[in-house]
Structures are given as structure tokens and as C-alpha cells.
Image 1 (cartoon, rainbow, N blue to C red):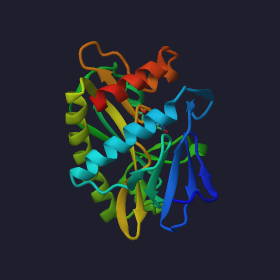
Image 2: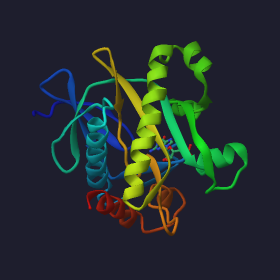
Image 3: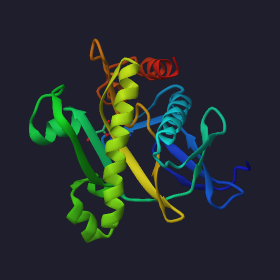
Image 4: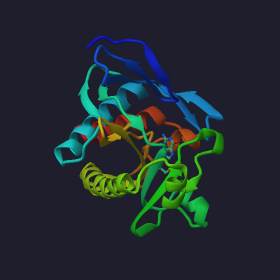
Length: 234
Ligand code: 5GP
């Protein structure tokens, strides 16, 4: 697969054209940012680890009937994906209170939620990704009601599949963020699923094994990402 022109560079990934117009290469970087990119750093080998974890999780989800943009792993840091038109709605699913939910509702972290909480955020850095609802999505024309019904159904299924999978790896899936896109008229799960986009706590000790180690200066960041990879692979 020929690597062409750079199409887009985000905070954690770069997208490149290929010789096929409907396929792109997603190249994972070691760069890490938090708090609207006011905190910047680098995590050694994060790109390699996140590519491998994402490939494994996309394959798992595909095997359970969730359509994703994943095509194949190309190299340590590169994944071949279907080109999508990203829907500017970030979907957050939460199983345990933490981060944004604790701040929003003034509740402590670590409370197991009676049922999963789904949130939508408008993917717009200049507005700091505000919390939005279905009416806002319709008002802005970000997605149709039919697309959002699918987004919601897929997100709930993904949560059940991933919760069960991580549980078997000795990890609690606290919360995670998903992005969806359109490819040839079909809705696909896109972006990545990794310790950058999920909160993962050790089942026994509640040790944080995700990007909160970077956000909160907890140290042993690379070790945490490696640990997640090791557990997923074993
Ligand atoms: P919170 O809203 O609590 O900050 O984030 C909820 C979950 O979604 C966390 O697992 C977090 O890692 C993920 N998440 C939310 N927004 C972003 C984002 O802009 N970038 C990344 N990498 N993850 C996000």
C-alpha cells in the first residue's frame, strides 16, 4: 500500500492518502496532549502500543458485528482504514463515575453507575467540546436522527462487548470516547480505542492504567500502557 500525501495531522495521529481513494493510513504518534492541548508531552512508544491495542479492539468489535473503519495493521505505528467523513459528535459512555462526569455533577470518582451513562460532546476545540444533546445535534445538522439512533445502539453494544473483554483482562472499563464516520453511505466506528480514549482501572487495586496518569502527573505512564497491551494480548 503506497503512502501518499499527508491529509490531516491531529494531536495523536496523522492521516495519509493511499493509492486507493477510499482508504487512508492512520499513523499513531507518541505525542500526548490534555486539557485542550494546554498540557503537552510525549509518551515513549505510545503510538506503537495504541496502534496495536486499537487493531485488536477493532478486530474484536468487527467479529461481534460492529462495523468499523479498520482494514488491517500495516506496521508498528500504521493502520489501514476506510476513509470516513467524521461526524462531529464525540460519544462518551460511562460505567463508573470519573473525570468529566464527577466534575459536571459534583460526585466523587469511583461510583459504579446503576446503568451506563451516554453523553454527546460537540467536537469543536474552540468551544472546548461542550456537552450537547440530540436537539443540538439536529440544530447544527451534525447527524440525522436515523444516524444518531445507530450511534446510540452501536455505542451500547460496544460498551457491553468491551466491558466484558476488559473484565476478562483484569480491567474495569470506567468510561471511553468513540467517534463515528460515514463511508459510502454507511456509519462506521472510526478513530481509535486505546488507553488514550478509555479509562481503565485494575480490577483489584483500582490502579489507573490510562491517560489519566499523564493528565494527573501520576508517573509510570508508559508502563501503564504496556500493561494494558500485555493483558489484552495474553
Ligand atoms: P471525560 O469527559 O471524563 O474527560 O472523558 C471521558 C472519557 O472519554 C475518558 O475515557 C477520556 O479519555 C475520553 N475522552 C473524552 N474526550 C477526549 C478527547 O478529546 N481525547 C481523548 N483522547 N479522549 C477523550
